[in-house]
Image 1 (cartoon, rainbow, N blue to C red):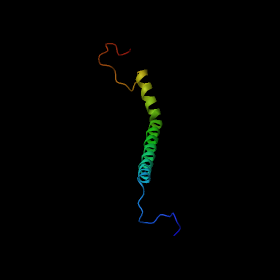
Image 2: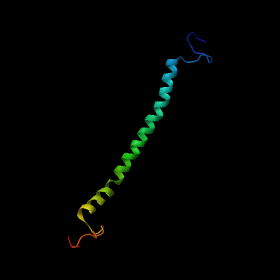
Image 3: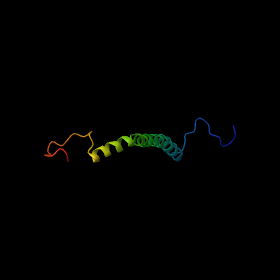
Image 4: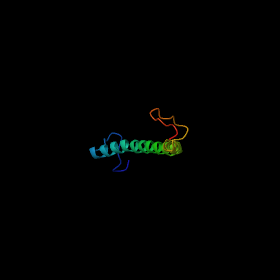
Length: 76
């Protein structure tokens, strides 16, 4: 065995242990966070036409909306 190589019996120093632990925790967090953000953005992008259509119906007062029972004149 060459000088300076680690053997199976050596334990990592505290610095190496903390660095490895942080790396082991950071990778799944970053990948999972990117996946969640991607799914939210994709869902918003796919449903945008539906939201746009619903908003235009609400502002137009189209036939899809029920008449307001409080109004005295249904033609307005």
